[in-house]
Amino acid sequence: MRALARITTALATASVALTLAAPGAQALDLATDAPVVTNDSIEVYPFGMAVIDVLANDVDPGDPDGSQLALCRLPAVDLDSISNPSDLPPVVAGDAAGFLGPEDSMMVLAMRGRLAQPVVVDYYVCNTTYLTPATLTVTMRTTEPVTVHKVPGKPGRLRVTNHNDKQVRWMWFGRHGGGGGSVPAHATRTMRVHTATVRWMAMIGGAYNSGLADRGVVRNVKIDPRDAKPAKPAKGEQRLPASVRALLQRLG
Image 1 (cartoon, rainbow, N blue to C red):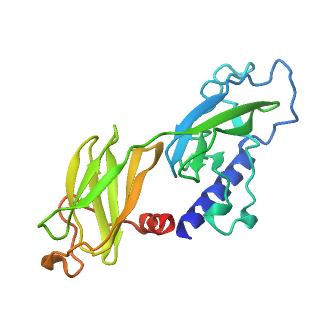
Image 2: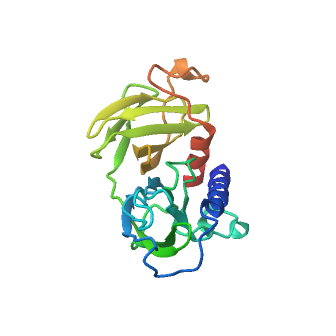
């Protein structure tokens, strides 16, 4: 529910910012002063968030530097009808509003682990007078597995192998907290854990396009006696923030 609350807050903030973005826009008009748009596309990660500057390839004939262009009329989400994440559409888009990304860029949230087909987001680009329709086509990136195994003879140690072409941030969550570390592309790292049942996820991507590469559960992990009680993370490890623990719980 914390994950849902953060998504709801982000959507509400984006909605307010969108309302304020271009108060002078009028009804659709094909006049020569209307914005000239180029439709965009983006690949997102499973359960990911991406930010894209959809205005970068659009032109305002009356203002060559494009400073008057803004996002308008993005698809609305009825927040009152949402009681859990499954009520959301596969893809949710909003104005990043300068908080989640550069000003006047679009935020895209993937609410599923896969998309059966591309999702087309309809919106408008506006200047101070006119609106022009535009689309953003959203597809999903393919990720490779991240495998996690217990290390024979070494209590409290898991061997994590990343089969992706990019680094992943491996994070675990258990009864006594959590932790994690980075695993380079096509590499293996040994991670210390201190709980018998380990729920984990591997995040992939960068600041403006990231998501879930893989997730899973490892059970019946033997505990190192030195980790029988919660301990400080080892060098290079970090405790999981509450937001990440909430996402792990939501993903099951």
